[in-house]
Image (cartoon, rainbow, N blue to C red):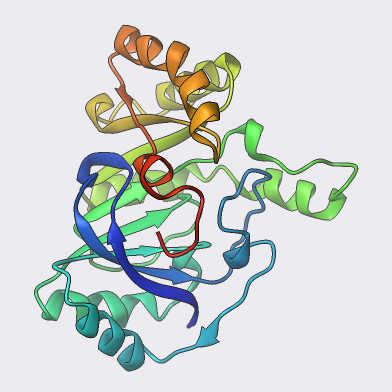
Length: 228
């Protein structure tokens, strides 16, 4: 399994914000969001090939009770199945961060799903092949249904403008079984000023629609830095 980085930090998003965690970042992704803040795991994947045993060993050294398996897209890798088994056997909580386009029969404690809306597609003129592939792949309703049927979950939508928020509402209408209290709307941006500008209108919008506003605390705490 190709791994871009393994590090200890503090969860900055979603229901477990503030929890010290070990992050295992898989390198490789089936999508190409233009706003991706981890291009070293998607647009320009890097890292080293590690066995499941090697990954488990590094997790043990960092000694956190919570582990976040992220990417890129971790669900690309069948090695996730024994990796999750090993993490659970050590008594650790597992969060998987995924775009919800791929399914694996694995165990986790929180499936953190970030569906990609039309605002995520790369520019068709600059990246025509990836634009087509991204648009063909980014929505997978059957995968979403399986993930929410089998796991505790949260949803995180990246919002850049009001039209994105309305599109997210239409998306949720397709899945009435999704608990709206587990849906977070997160501002797009890698600068605190960008996040604050969107928050001004997005937080009251979330209150109006009974959804959670999701600040991206890791950017507030550390900036847009790797290993955070």
